[in-house]
Image 1 (cartoon, rainbow, N blue to C red):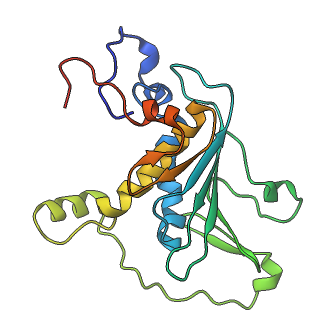
Image 2 (cartoon, rainbow, N blue to C red; image 1 turned 90 degrees about the vertical axis):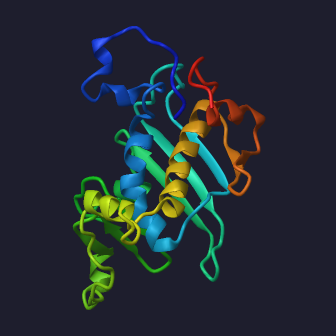
Length: 220
């Protein structure tokens, strides 16, 4: 996915934002937006490498990404925190909770945490504990995480040796890895177990999507 792609003739269809829809240049909605939204549960729940990944969507195309995907991840227990199941939806697909009338408020894109005693629906600007009637008396805790100075400033300051970014590669690498593994499961057509330490999938066929052959002249 990151390796230099095969030579392609010019096509205006690749430009504007359409380049993201082709495997040679991008990875569809999953690879484009996953890190923006799944950053919330990754950070809040201390997630890193999934142990199992599977995906469903339209029949895979050799060149173009899917119009919609549902990707399921299993994450192992971390310290005293239990195992987590995480599901990604795009292309108009949504969790079953949205089908129950009156259960969830009108909401655009966001993240739904489902717990034993309730749910938390949130994005980067708002949050709601659900069912709302059960949490009327709840008071949100005071903020404890320092606000970022901005992506670009963080990066520049880190390059100058003044600390590190909020999301260094030790964190963002695993987040990006999870997104890409969803694409691998979809294109492979079957789920697989994942060994994050060895970067190895249980299905041998996954390897061709994990590591691509480099174009001549671009070999490492």
